[in-house]
Structures are given as C-alpha cells and as structure tokens.
Image (cartoon, rainbow, N blue to C red; front, top):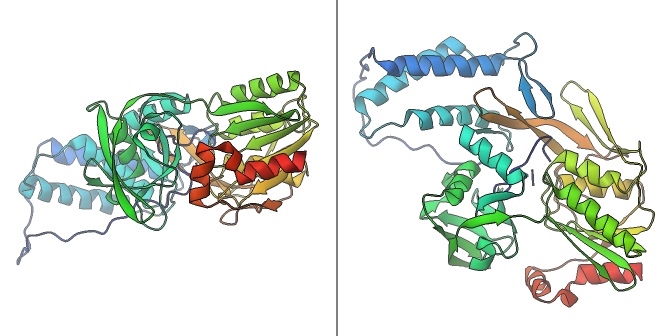
Length: 435
C-alpha cells in the first residue's frame, strides 16, 4: 500500500510492509578455542572485496533522481561507514564459511542478500533491493500482465506474515478461494514470516511449478489452498451507469494503463449523460504517482495543486493538474482501511477542494513516497525519499483520512456484498446521497 514515484509492487505491493523480521540463531557448533580461518587465494576473497567495494561506493555516493532514475551526480558524502573494516570483516566471514560450511554456496544469492541487508539496515519498512530478475518482474507487473496468482500482498505489521491485500476477481488465487485480508502463513511449506516480500513474490511467480500451496489464516482457523498459476491480466478499472444517471467507476490500483482505462470510463459515462459520479477506491493500496496525477487531472481544473512532496533537504515539489478537461458533477469517493497511498492522494485532494464527499471508513494512512532507482546492472533499489501533503498542507501518514460519512462494514458484510451488490452498505449510502 506502495505511492512510489516510479512503481510499487503488484503481487507484492509495498505500502505498509513493516519489513520482514527474523531472529538470528546461534550456531550449533561451539568453538571452545578461536579458530583462525585459512586465507585462500582463490576467487572467494576477491569476490567479496570487489562486491563490497561496489556496495560501499553506492553507499557513499550522492544519489540524484528524476522519475525513478538513479545517478551519481555529486561528490560522495558517505554515511559514516568504516568501509575498510566492513570489507575486512566480510573477508573473514567468507573464509570461515569457505572452510567450514557444509553445503554449497550460491555466490549470486549471497551477493543479492548482502545488498538486501544493506537496504534493511536503513530501518525503512519500504526499502528494498531488487535483483535483475525481481526488477524485471516488477516492471512486468506494473504493465498489468504477468505470470502468477493474481494478488497484491503486504507484510502484516504485527506478525510479519504475508497479508493478501487485494485478490483479483477470476484470477488464480480468487478461484482457489483466497479472500482479501487472508494472512498467508506458508507458501509450499515455507514460513512467510521468515521470507522477504520479494522472496514470497518470486516463489508464487516461479514457472518451475504450475501450482503453489498456501496455508492461510482466516477467522481463527488455518485453511490450505492449492492455487494453479496462470497468466494474470489486470483490468484495474471497472465501470457502469447506475440508475438516475449515476456513474460508477471502481479502481483497484494505479498501474501504467489505469489512467487510460479511467479516461475511457469517464468519456463513456459522460457520453451516456452521467449526472453524478461514484469513484470506488476501497481496497486500493496505491501505485504509480504519475498515473494518479493524470486521473485527478481529469477532475480538477488545470494548474490546481493535487499534492506536494517535501524531501529531507526541505525541497518542495508541487504536482498540479495537467488537463484542461474537468468534471463538474457531484462526486462521492468510497474508501476503507485498505485505501492507501495514491488512493489517499486522490481522496485528500478532492476532499480538500470540497469536490467530493468521502464515504466509508478511515483510510490506511501512508503519507510517504518511495523512489525506485535503477542501477547500471539491471537491478534497482527502493527507499523512502519524501513525505507528501494534501493541497491544504496535511500529512496523513499514520493518521489516514476520515470519511465525511462514516459507514462501517464487517468482514462478513463485505463477503456478502461481493456476492450480492445490493448488500453493499457503503455503495448503497453513496447512491442515497446522490439521489
């Protein structure tokens, strides 16, 4: 629940994901006397020396970004790390492992986890390192088509298990019986609390097997689901004309083509004589900021501020409406506790300008922005770069946005509403207000 400048992770959306945790374990062997590792002249020491030289250059470098692009464009300031001591210590660790570790070592996996460990050390719950393959997957998912199970996930802040944030209708996980809010405890027998979110996503997207077995926790009981993987095509916008010429547009997330789908929906509904509009952002964990800006620009006058960001140096960047095409009818926004990030940018903007009535429950409360910075080898890093503010100057981080009209729904009521839309209390209230 994700807004990143460049991207958030579908089938692994980063919104809240307080980073995966795990307790270090002591070794089974007790060395009663210190053992000096043998210094090997093979590629091992050179591998780590080169690896950490590159890593520490990255750490010390000044980072410039624009639209998610990474560049070293100013003199290194550094983080205060003792680079020489770190390199020496890693060489010693590698020597011990080389001499005593029983199993074969995957050099690439070690390297990737060193980078991931560096990002985890920032203590930023949204920070991560993407290997070349992971970054490729990320870009595929933002395009709206990928191979997997059809669910956006997050790390549960309390348990560190993977949480199913949004299960796409008629996709593999949905067909297997997964529901929004399911706590995914195991994937193919592996504890998800001990995995990074990226590891979980890579596993359920792997083409090595056609199915994956998930153990989920729901309503006090454990349920085992067997999910048959397939190509997932995401239609993020669904719309229809309700009675009384009330347009209804549901937006499940903000990816590359969501703004195009939203514009098509607006144009079609307008052509049908739409008099008022409901935009449903419930369970929308966010996505691309640029997509959100384009969509809000279809509603508010050109040049008006949609939101602004402020970075660690206090630099302020305004994001304004870039379209002269606006909508003048009444608007209601439907939100709930899973409406986050880019969803909150749209909600905060329209509420500040009194262009929409917000109906439902308090939103999630993610008022910070992450940037994804591609590296020259095809990998990428992500971390928090700024806080964002609504046009009135409010930062909603860890606060959320209170609805103008509060309508709560229990999990059971949500389930019933999915089967029978006439039982959707929040949508029903929105229709009543517009009539």
